[in-house]
Amino acid sequence: MLVLNRKAPRRKQHGITLVLITLVMLFLLGMAGFSIDLNHQVLNKTRLQNAVDSAALSAAVVADETGDVELAEAAARSTLASFSGESGNDQLAIDGDLTTVTFSFNLETFSLAGAFSPPAGNEDIYVRVSVQDIELSQFLSYLFGLDKNVSASAVAGRSAAITEVCNITPIAMCGDPSGDVDDAWGYQQEGVDILNTAHNSPDQIHEVKIGSKSGTEMGPGNFHLLDFGQDGGGGSGGSALVRQALAGAYNGCTAVGDTVLTKPGN
Image 1 (cartoon, rainbow, N blue to C red):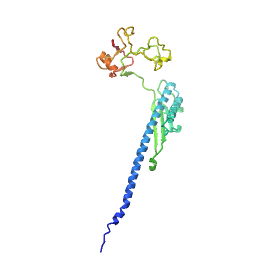
Image 2 (cartoon, helix red, strand yellow):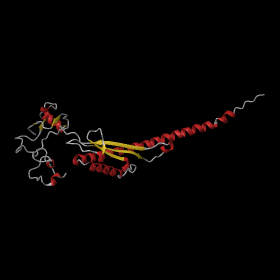
Image 3 (cartoon, rainbow, N blue to C red):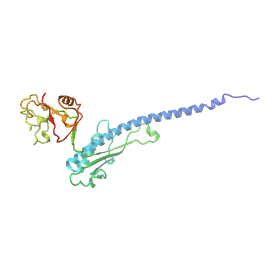
Image 4 (tube, rainbow, N blue to C red):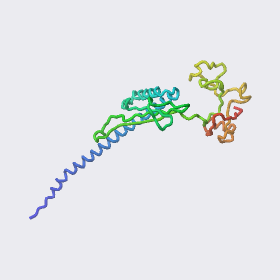
């Protein structure tokens, strides 16, 4: 006589549940580790990129002003060190051996400061700052044998000369043609000593638009308002365009050296 044992298969299936739970737990642990470590890596990658961008810009300024690439490299490394020491950037231990500062005048071949030959004439000097393989703290990714490093690089140099300006405020500001950039602080009120450095202070009031139509250098009834309607910027000009420009709605551009008409009246 044959007897069916229906309980045996159930006892054999008990181990399958344990295996499935283990696999699910491993999957959840992997996803948690991936999300935590990935977010941490992206955050520090952004911080490192900001530091490298600033370092390249500071080095480019020094190289442009002095032509000394060794001073420019020192400026770049100093900027990186200051970023590394800031609060919240303790993960970015920017070691000198991980940082490379190179120079070029054609954006094709970059050389170290010691091997760089200054360009002849007035050619620009470009700076590349590169930081490679900074190790970050790992949370759960080490369980899967994954490395966690960040790298960043940036190139900076002299910007192109400004040939035109756009979205202009339609107010003329009188200046001294024989002055220099230190005097370019707008229309000075009568009696203000421009040699006094206090006039560069944010507390100093500069009169941009005159309040009286008499005694103006641009003629009677002229309040230094500019009319860009005849300059190809769109619109028919006149008071309507002046109002639009004052509100920031003027989208035309004016090249340096162009002649601009004034709009009499207030």
